[in-house]
Figure (cartoon, helix red, strand yellow):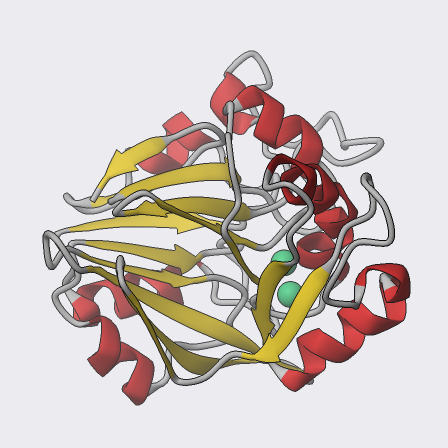
Length: 260
Ligand SMILES: [Zn+2]
Ligand SMILES: [Zn+2]
């Protein structure tokens, strides 16, 4: 299984517009340039795209993503949903077939509101995305593996926490972005995973995201072989703050590829 970080930044990206110059962030380090968060997972050849940020097109060109077979929207916030229009290229590449899209009811209603022209089974003509929408079940069984979903608290909405298990290898990957905490159920689902990805916004507390301290506590409890933090603000400098993390835990960066 392969995990590709398309983006690792928070909702305003890093650096932000009019980034304060007094903040200690080394912008000569490309790992501190963060587009909005999403990942691409290749599970036994199946291309699963999780979220589509504002920079989705540029991220896909940069990482040479050849296909999207299944799209999962973790929740309907702008930094996760707004790139979905560019999925139409992947519909074209598959000969105009509709793309399966799975989300919560909150995510589906947001997709219908923003992209009404794409919410039908067949493209009107080439160049128009077509989303085959359905609610994400707790367990999605596929020939290439299984994807389990657990809901994570994220303020007024809930985020889909996703655990991938590849059929051929049994390897497990948990992706928990945008959450205030990892619930006991989500901890149990991810425990001992080969790779764990966690929301770790910034050192300071935040009402709807885990801060560094909360993410470290969740990482220790879940005890994955390797843990990566994502969705960071400009408060996090990759090299400076990465040194302070325990063994097996690191800050992800845009373009990082992990073989699970
Ligand atoms: Zn977000
Ligand atoms: Zn969010």
